[in-house]
Amino acid sequence: MKNKRFKRKPKRTTFWKMLAKGMIIPILITIIVGNYTSFFIRQQIYNYYDIQTDNVVTNYIRIKNRQNELKKRYVPQCVFLSTFSSVDPITGGYLDPVTWVEPKCRSVFFTVDENGDIVHSSREIMTIGVKKKEDPFRPDYYYFDPMEYDIPELEGIFEEQLKDKESGEYINEFDITSIYINEKEQKMIPHIINVKRYKLDEGFLNYRYNDLGSAKLEKEYTLTVDREVEGYVLTEIASSKTIGEYPGGGTIQGVYGCDPVHVEEVYKQYKNEIKDWLDVNSSKSIYSSNFEINKNLDVVFERIYGDDEEKAIISYIETDITNLRSWRRMIFIMGLLFLFMTMFVLVICLMRNVRNKAHYAFEDYQRALTNNLAHDLKTPLAVIGGYAENLMEMRKDVGSEKELKYLSSIMKNVSYTDDIISKTLKLSATEQIKKLNKTKVDIKALAEKLAEKYQTTLEEKSIELNISGSGEVTADIDVLETAVENIISNAVKYTDEGGCIKITADKKQLSVVNDVTENIETKDLLMPFVKGDKARSDKNSHGLGLAIASAAAAQNGFKLKLECKDKSFKAIIVF
Image (cartoon, rainbow, N blue to C red; front, side, top):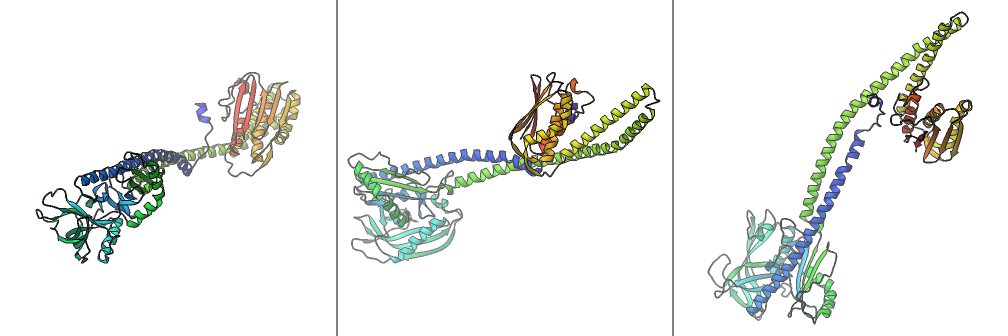
């Protein structure tokens, strides 16, 4: 109970210091969890892109093979017949959005011949599937390339389509009922186009599933293009809204693909690399080969494949994964986790702060009570001591030996009690120092100066004193003197006659070592009023010297350590 009662109190803290320390754990947990989560998301994205890219090529080859079986020369754009079904704000196609990843990126698909020239590409075109009565489930596909024919009437549709793909808020529904057909080249020029423009509530996802849902019809108009071109025959087809009329317009009709400018940029960027690769692999079967032009998977994915007819099929995807919905979701989840942990730490700190304030208030009350009692006791003690001295003076010639002994004992106990009170006040004052005047202090010189006070005692007890070392430390010299003096005083007091005291100073610590008659338990010696073993329970010891030294060292930001082994007691101030 004694140890707990007088155990040295830890340095006081504030709410903000507790909160700052407490926030280390939430920050570390958030960083660790976020790091592992980001790694998982990144791998999911890479795997997803890899699968999507393979699907694009697989679908293209499947469609191409089917077209070859049917003796059709034209291979439809892979954009709408494969996994590329949406287009991103950066003006390119982007991968089919799914729940986990919804990337913002640019994608390009094109095939090249042995010279590296483009044969087919995912460049923006208008396409329609025309159903024939002979085989309504296998429509003939025709396309119109805006870069091949300059038709001003259609420019608005293509420009509007790119803008709509950028925002994802609008969609045009086409119903083509008349076209100019070039059967030989599988091309067409639209003649009559019925357009319905919708505003989508949930962006482009509704259109993916051919479900406009609650989309609001913004406008409806019919566009007629009169353009007779050699080799093209005007052909009327049934509306896609009708069933059983042939030739009929298929459900696949409209504007599909990427910004032509972007397709051209990608092709120019990698044309040389593709040509070099084709030169190396021209004599090889390259259908199953896999060629990554750019290894920076955070930016670009490329795959090159090939078969006997088209020497290479390039599926290119460029993305900024920091814009993915999954990353936004991760940041949101990490934010919630961090907020939850922060609130938990905040509540704990508030509770501890309330408890600390009550504890500090009680400590202040105890200290004030002790100081007041000490001050109040000093006056009557001085009076008692004065009366005892007067009586001693009056009775020194006529008083009995017993009377003089009692008076002497009174004076000694008054002096002892007064010394305890003075040191108690000194300990309290040392613990309450708030402002320090720190300067450079020569440690050895300070030790030599303070040791001189005890020169007489050292000579009387024949104690050998050795002071060595050198070094400077930044500290409040008055407070540091209090610590060092109490340590030296303690060493002088408890070193037996003929013993030795060694003081060693350097820039890291001050060590005071003295001989003792037996090893001493040092565990509680820094607590007030603890004297240790029987050897320290005499009337000359108050158990406050080391406590004052420890408090003075702590005020300067230092620490006092005690050791005792092999009958050698060591007090060390660690700077």
